[in-house]
Amino acid sequence: MKVSYDFSGKVAVVTGSATGIGHAIAMEFAKAGADIAVCDYNEEKGKATVEEIKALGSKAAFYKCDVSKDEDVAAMKDGVMKEFGTIDFLLSNAGVSYGYKPDKTPCLGPPFTNVLVSDWERMFDINLFGMVRVIQAFYDVFKEKKEGKIVCTASIAAFESTSLQPQ
Ligand SMILES: NC(=O)c1ccc[n+]([C@@H]2O[C@H](COP(=O)([O-])OP(=O)(O)OC[C@H]3O[C@@H](n4cnc5c(N)ncnc54)[C@H](O)[C@@H]3O)[C@@H](O)[C@H]2O)c1
Image (cartoon, rainbow, N blue to C red):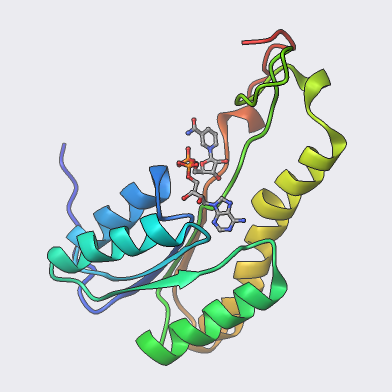
């Protein structure tokens, strides 16, 4: 069954939308007619995403924003409100996953024992507190409108354990 939406006139802010799942979310919202604020710290790919969205006929703007930085999130919120005037959907998707193989080359996920505490701190500052920062930044707008949707990308890892063995 194909479900279609009409988000014409709506504004979606998508963090981590330069690549991957966030990029796909931004494109699907744009196809449904929404205007998109592309928020990411990857400027090159973020700007490319903006051009792809514009080609679909939606308004789009890029905000270089590291969600682990209070000042970046505050500036992004101010920029979005200035450019778009409101927000209807907040997609908090920016995230990272760190791990290292026994030879110390980076990989996703296990082994747990090779992930440094500093990597855990960085992951929490982006994946968890980054989400908190962006929700807090836009909370007053949603409260005043008394409507809107906030969706946060999580992980199957919240429900299923992973192996401690190297991949
Ligand atoms: N792909 C998977 O299998 C998988 C599994 C579990 C969870 N996730 C979650 O899904 C989300 C998207 O992951 P993905 O697979 O599309 O990864 P991805 O690396 O392709 O995309 C993540 C995007 O977030 C951006 N980003 C990272 N840190 C940022 C920061 N501090 N500030 C702003 N932007 C930042 C990156 O530049 C990138 O564009 C993440 O939250 C990730 O943890 C993905």
